[in-house]
Length: 155
Length: 157
Image (cartoon, one colour):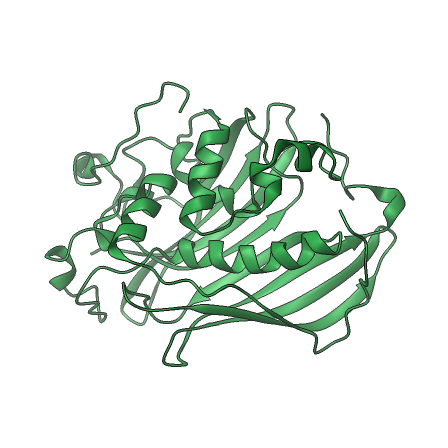
């Protein structure tokens, strides 16, 4: 595990791998997550109105988006010895088969503590039309090398 | 998956599930211990396109700070459903996820026995929609907290 520059400045940008859900990938996410809600499987059911919302067709799991954001953060963090400590998300628009979503984040703050350096980031996920489908905040830690995991894990 | 037969038809037990009116903030949800397998971790990882060697390459993971294979932080997506029964209200058809907030302590690992403490925390009406807030803490077999989180769901009418 490499230890490189962990002094990322405010404004440092991180971008993630684009993700293009298909009907097959949504079905696979149902099976991998055990979330078989008809929102993700049943087009006929999705012709209903959900309160004031009308989706019109199946939608990707919001938590699939959460997984895509997490991959962006951990790909960056693991390469620099960092740990994902927190992720908060809000889903703004549905993501449907045929869309391509791209996550990005920017460092907004940092704080040195007794155990390491903590950064906060703003997260945005946009679709292929540039629409923001998800927003969030993340918190990550770069532990001091002598702290190992930065946790007291029992093995 | 440790011999557990998971429900895939979310309509089957729908009549048994608590409606928004019946959900009591503060009341614990019924939960089930779950053994997290390497297969389940890797199945999830492949679906979200996350093939990091910490989840797939034993030798790489053994030589990392984690000293073994781990699950990605977002594995709680699977654990949320793996650790709750088929009649849990989170499986109500039409439940819409509005947002989530999760805090991570230590990674989950293959063969961990995961337990969940979960409850509805709040419920309210906003913009003509029915919301329930739930909170959740996942533990490993050593009683260590893996992660803790909170979610906002819009409930079906």
